[in-house]
Amino acid sequence: MATADGVEYVDASKPAQDRMKRYEKFADEIAELIRTGVIAPGEKVPSVRHASRTYGVSPSTVFQAYYLLEDRGLIQARPRSGYFVHALARRQLHEPDIGQYASGSVEVDVSELVFSVLSSLKDPDMVAFGSAFPSPNLFPLARLSRSLANSARDMQPHAVIADMTAGNPDLRRQIALRYMVSGMMLPLEELVITTGAMEALNLCLQTVTQPGDLVAIETPAFYATLQVLERLKLKAVEIPVHPREGIDLDSLADSLQRFPIKACWFMSSLQNPLGASMTDEKKQALYALLKQHQVPMIEDDVYAELYYGSQPPKPVKSFDTEDLVMHCGSFSKCLAPGYRVGWVAAGRFAEQISRLKLMTTISPSVPAQAALADYLQHGGYDRHLRKLRHSLESQQRAMLASAARHFPADTRVTRPNGGYFLWFEFPTRVDSLQLFQHALAQGISLAPGPIFSASRHYGHCARLNYGHPWDTRSEQAMATLGRIIASF
Image 1 (cartoon, helix red, strand yellow):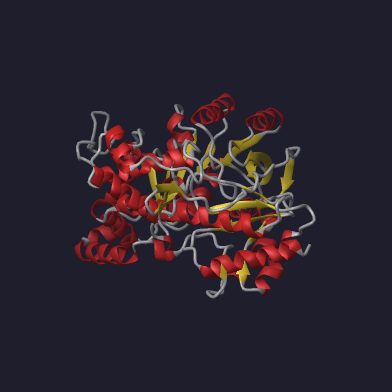
Image 2 (cartoon, helix red, strand yellow):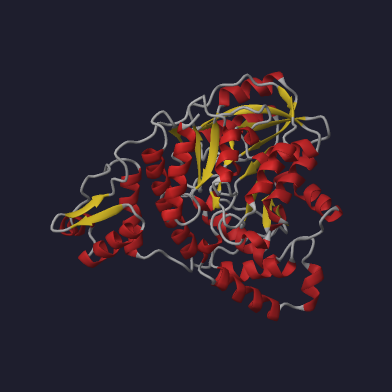
């Protein structure tokens, strides 16, 4: 709908189409107690009778919830004893300790290393611990195909041309609606549809920098971040990331004071590769720093829908009062990787980004945009996301338990509350590039630590992907990795 000032906002009168059932909500409440340690591994969960009386739900609702938690691998039934939290491993590995590297501007030169790693991950028979995507079997590809057919059949000829620059209006409304449900009212004019999140991130960076400029990035950082900086001839100022708490704000404040930083490129939630998520308080403090120095932030939030708790994390964009934050998202990690459709809520930079896009790629696939708009409106997106999150959480528990069984006791590992990556810090004697080569010879891929740093740190670290359904082959691959690690 349009307001008196001519700015179009999404109509909020339409009710949510895909509400959670009561047993699903109750299952999520129990899962949160397990996740936060209120109910520890091996402990008994409330009996059906006690849970029914305490939570005011029917016994059948409790049974359905417990069956769902069993499917998710969180609890198990014991004959004549009740339900207990799954005790998957006798010991747990400790959390990594990311070093506080001195920050300074760094020339980025990682592409050859990254390409050499990525080129070896294409074998479909490889155990895909090094992949950047979850299993395509977790996505509703058949339902998406129906949406593609439906939207293509109903597409008006003029829309093929008219929607190219701004993006499909129905898709933009659906995206804006999801922002609205999370508490953010964004004008449609601020949303720019792009060819995946990577184009959005590239366009944002090109809009606010020139070759030779300094950009604050995380360390460790997603390797594509480093490749973009290298291509655009930008210098990196690396800001350490705590594996649980996210960006080190003291280090950022110091760097903003010392260096003429032109932009920050951060992932404030479910950071790749660590999986770290900042608290709302830290996100507010981060924005206060940006506002104080008037430095724009490019917020890479492609894992936003893959949280495990009951509440989605807020982006830094939600605290933005001066349109300094460019919030980038995508459907590639949670719904349709091959469709290559992303977006940016670009704030004050929307017009510049739109013009730059018009000068480069012009538009993502118009049929793909229409298909996603149809699916978001009619396909049960939230239901799919709940199922996907449950699968990923179960698979994370399986990999953590397997690592505890097979990896050396002094190995450290993250425990993110979402996504599908674990970051492993091995004993310092382990060379992760050699580990990568030895693992490849055994049909196992992984992502070695040095590809995540402009300074080539993390030589004894690696990122492993648990986004594929866990099976005997996965378990055997972890055992093989454990033997290789122990051989160093």
